Length: 154
Length: 103
Image (cartoon, rainbow over all chains, first blue to last red; front, side, top):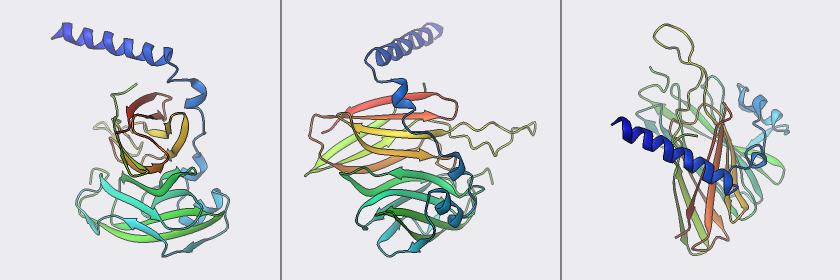
């Protein structure tokens, strides 16, 4: 048992060395974009729009949230966002009643489709917002997701 | 360093669909341990995906992304046999990079 653990550690250390040698872990790549602390500390959709450099966000039927109406487990709620707006450059997922509203932001480079999927934690039944930046303006969609078991140990 | 990611990249027509499952605790910093002390936050903050060195997605995450995060997205311009590389960096400065071949 002990020996296999040691072997595992040795081999994983070797893998790290390989990755470094192959240039996969260049420091400049890791620090490519700095984490937007201010954005992740906002409590409301309107505040987040301002932190991201906009004035207001307009509700849009061209933005769709793909998520269940009821999620049993608030720790793992699948949320997808699809934007049909031209020149969509970024997508954000927000949970209104979480301690901090912003869960994730995605930058969509040219050639990447404006649709992403992930899983988020939800403290309680809440509106989920998809905030989309397209052609320099902000748009959003909202969907209520009911939680039967909270994502914070509840 | 963390455990390896599971990455799948499949080409259908001119669109490549990428699915990633990462292995990370994604601790929020809001929870307390049994002694009532807060458990420090530890979560993935940035994710970058590239195909042949070209950025195909970058993301910033907060602690509200679920543990062992799942991510799926689609991009154009990838060919079968090309490499997709995904890199994450967490709030403790730890990072991990894995790659797969488009099929």
